[in-house]
Image 1 (spheres, rainbow, N blue to C red):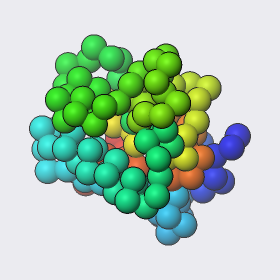
Image 2 (image 1 turned 30 degrees about the vertical axis):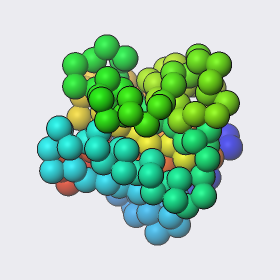
Image 3 (image 1 turned 135 degrees about the horizontal axis):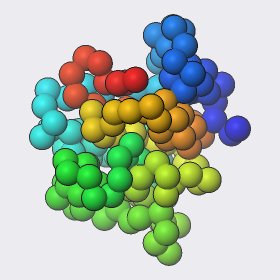
Image 4 (image 1 turned 30 degrees about the horizontal axis):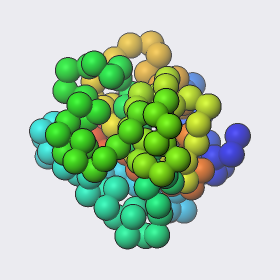
Length: 159
């Protein structure tokens, strides 16, 4: 894997349901490989995602170095992928030829096999079921540098 070891430890702990998730998250945050962005409501998530894209751009990243990965399907009700805020950023899907110079916004499955220096993971509040840990693992391990998780409330990583 190309992901930083700190992110790999978090992703693996989530995937396996390990009790070490909190410690792994703390270490990843301290190493600045993981950022958790809490939103007061579901409706505020898209604007926070756009804000995080802006921050990453301000840190010197180009659009083609950033991805927004949803843990749900493209057509899921309430997914950030369908928001007007994200559309205004000019994102493209993972299979779009324009992905070479745009922010990519797609699902964890469609982004599998691709990587970006910065990955923003969203829609954790929309995921339930036995494959939740696998979804988090796939999404988080697409990050080559930093993973930003944008979610609702204090428990952003719902696993």
